[in-house]
Length: 70
Image (cartoon, rainbow, N blue to C red):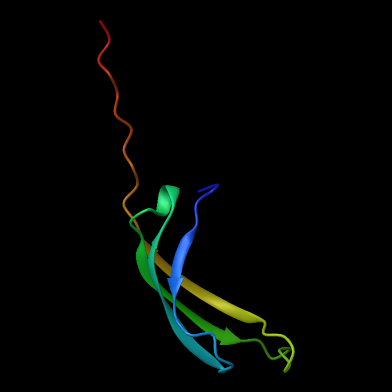
């Protein structure tokens, strides 16, 4: 998955937990969809936000197309 990214949609407010949606991505994750549930770490302060992420992503891997040999 090197070089692949996920496109995530949601609000980044300061909440103890919440959820974002995965709406696509690049490279291997071009047609990805799913959810990311987050929980703020106990060590988070007003100036930082350390989150534990539970990521569930569905994608269809590209299949290699072989060319017939002559």
